[in-house]
Length: 202
Image (cartoon, rainbow, N blue to C red; front, side):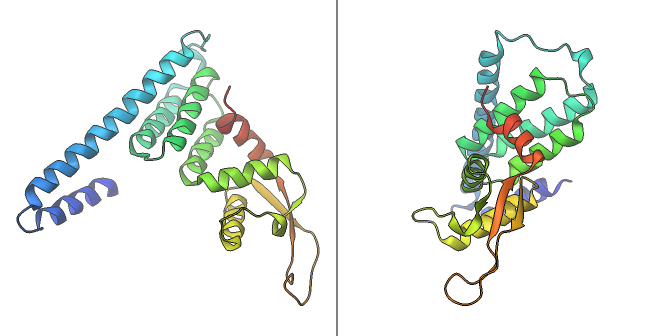
């Protein structure tokens, strides 16, 4: 049994224990959850079909079928479980791109793209695209109204961990409020490919 299924059983059992309303509440919750999952994937597939109807798609023979099916299986699962409409739109673009250009010999890279899509947040995407448009920007100079600077620093570190951004030492400041080691940021080659494949609507 997959971990996701185990968690759902635990949640179901936990809801059942709530006095008086537990049974009906568990039924309502899982019925609603399943309905929303079906709606998400059904709507997304309708949009993909509509947006690709005038496209010339590669034949299945041009794809590695096992690799393609593996990616489709995973991306549809992500769409079903994604609550943010913004992220579902990114998964939709990814889905379209694995159909419009052959998945053959590039599985590892496309799987990595999908893994990053799962982890990356809207704020991280915003920061990533800012760095893309502003090469050699210094991390300490990046701010956003209403967002704690520590969250921005942490998000930039995550972008580096994903392999999307690379940093080089800009300078060293000793003492005062600006003490530290400011880093100069640039988007990596992998990051540029990720942006082209996953974030650039065609």
